[in-house]
Image 1 (cartoon, rainbow, N blue to C red):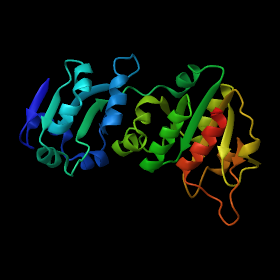
Image 2 (tube, rainbow, N blue to C red; image 1 turned 90 degrees about the vertical axis):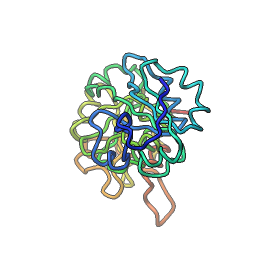
Image 3 (cartoon, one colour; image 1 turned 135 degrees about the vertical axis):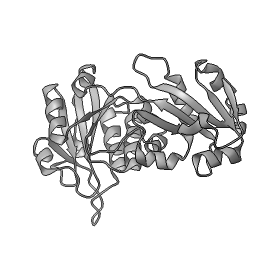
Image 4 (cartoon, rainbow, N blue to C red; image 1 turned 180 degrees about the vertical axis):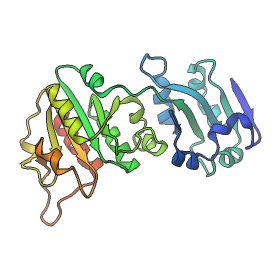
Length: 268
């Protein structure tokens, strides 16, 4: 279903128009992914019972020629709109040098308890609490995928991992790592503990250094927003761990912290 597009006002591609403004408003169950690596990852996971659905592609003419193998692998009912680079830039509202946009329908979010119940006797879970920065959210999902985390829990205050920028920063990991939302940090800790997880909270004020933490079979690592960090009430419910640093400096970017911690817990 390769469909040429010659006008930015073509009504068939209305969902691709003004991408940044749509990001701010929200997509109500849809998501926008960009770039070749993300597209290939998304296409490789299509068709499963628990997969996202690809609704349409918008490609520049140059990318359509390069991605012939991807196009061939797509279901026949997925429209593939192809435009010249100038028209594509006009449609999305900025110069999109990657020349690749994929519009998808997000799979329904699982109930958090059900998600945890699917995990094995040895499992690694990430909990992101109060994260409103899409770069950090994407970075945490990228690390979760890289170090084999089985699932991510996010609280109601956190941003959407399927926001376009979060997907891009995660290199598509937020499209493939299972996640669910919980009400808040206390609910996450209760949920995890009732399912036999050792819950570890990361903080510069942690009571033990990360290097001394021996990986429990079922473990969950909690990460809070930069600045305030995790709430005191959540810290009081958990085992608190710190990453020692040079004198005069006591904090790391939360995505960087997650990478260090998940590498330690994964045993890679």
